[in-house]
Length: 182
Image 1: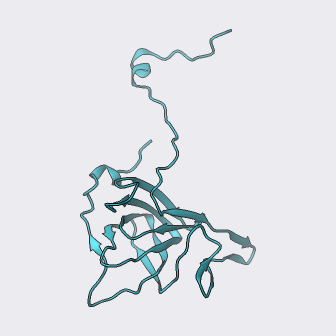
Image 2: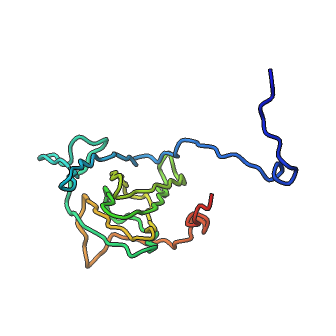
Image 3: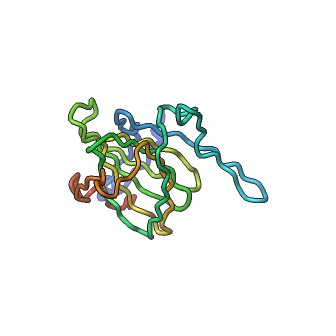
């Protein structure tokens, strides 16, 4: 059988590496759900959440909305890390415009996926929901155009006693936030 490989000069052959494409690490309770953005000559329409008396419907997990908020991230803005531990507060995030690089880290002592890190890239081009359970640290960095984030929580924000603990942006290593330069 003929050899079809390409011979490289020594310095390039020694420096050569190949990409691998492993499945994304899973974190217990985290799920994603792509949304359908229907486009026409008049613009676009997208259903964000379908609700009934029991809460959110037709998704991989349950959530009863208690607050819906919008956050506008300035270009390249980093907002990391926050975590909800005083009481349960689960969230569903969806980027409507721009792009966010999101990091999730499981910090729950009793979780089967304790310490697991997961990177997601959400964008308004291809809207996707991500469910973030209590005890999972989450943070983001906006892309060059900034981003608009719509999120739904199953607990209301309490100004007198915020349930939003903070961890340093670099607690899980500064390398998390480095730009992938190929």
